[in-house]
Every structure is written in C-alpha cells, then in structure tokens.
Amino acid sequence: MKAVVRDVMSTRPVAVSENAPVKEIAGKLREFRVSGFPVLGAGGRVTGVVSEADLLVKEALLDRPRGVRGTVAGLVHHAERSKADGVTAADLMTSPALTAAPDDTVEHAARLMYTRKVKRLPVVDAAGRLVGIVSRGDVLAVFDRTDDEIRMEIVSQVIPDCSEPSWYSVIARKGVVTLEGTPETVAIGHDIVERARHVQGVVAVRDRLVYRVTPVPGRPGPHS
Image (cartoon, rainbow, N blue to C red; front, side, top):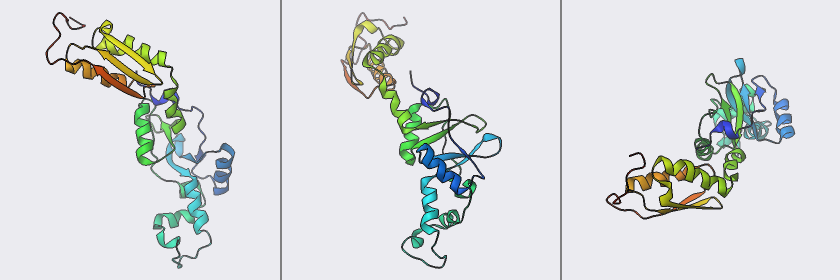
C-alpha cells in the first residue's frame, strides 16, 4: 500500500500572511529553524512561499544603487530587484507556490522536491487552503518500516492480488526485498515485482523469479 502525504505531513504548519513585514519573517525563520514559509492570502489560501533566499536577495541588493551594475547587481533579474525593494511577504514571495495535496503519494511529493529543488511543500486542500507541510525528512520517514512489516505486506497483500503466495519466497533485509518463485506468466511476475517496488519502506527489489514463456502446467490462476 502506497503511503500518501497525509500520512507523513506535519499538521501544524507555520505560515505568514501576505502583509507580514520583513522583520517578522526573518524572526520566524530563526525561531522555527526552517528555510521558508507558506504565505497565506484571503481565506487561508496559499498564495506563495517566502524563503531565506528571498531575504538574501534583499540583503545583497539593499545598499547597491540601481544604476550600478556590480558583480551581484549585474546578474540579478528585474524580478529580484523588485524583491529587494519589498517590505512584506507578498512583495518577496515566490508565486504561485509549489504545493502537494493530502492524497498525493509520498513518491509524488518526493519527486516534486527533487526535480524542483525545494526542501518542503505546503499541503493544500481542494480550495487551496493550507492543511499541512511535508518536508524531505517526512518523505524519508517511509523508510522507517521494519523488514517484517514490509515482508508481511508483500506476502499478505501484494502477491495474493496477483498469484498464489505459497509459490513464492519473500525476504526483506534493510528494506531490500528479494523475490523468489515461479509465476504463472511473465506478465504476472513483472506485476508482482512492480507492486513490491511501491510498498512503503522498500528501498529496492531483487527479482529472482523464474520466468516461463508459457503458463506453468497444473497451475490455475489465483482467481480461477
């Protein structure tokens, strides 16, 4: 069974309003030891994200005259120049925010964080309201399951949906699952392996199944 974001997210997220001043944002970043916050607009909807990087732009350009194109200023985009002049979260934030939904898979959230190079995602409901925060640490928590829990799920849920469990041996060690046995068909074997890969806590699957081109004689399908 795939873990979803609601299973691992923090349900007490810290956020700032669009009109939060820069000093308040900086103070909260230090107080809560995080690198950024969701920014909330009307009705608690997430309108953006403000981060340490946004404040660094302001600090870097604070005293530099507009006409001077020094090493820093010459590389800064016009949008960042605007951020440097900002005084509230709405001025500084990156918008729209990259978000996740409570029913998204943890795998999906991890892929978003990896590809977009962010450390956390605001979790929003269907109306765009903030309901949680999921971080890289939360995503990695899925690997805390014991080997016994992983093996039991594969034996009792994954394989019975595809084939006869007694035909297989399942070993789980440090999250690495080894599958042995003889499926009725190649397609069934591949299905078992693919489903096992998506079991919460599985790090890798070693496919040691014996595949046959034709169905194994005397072995009816599990639902026949």
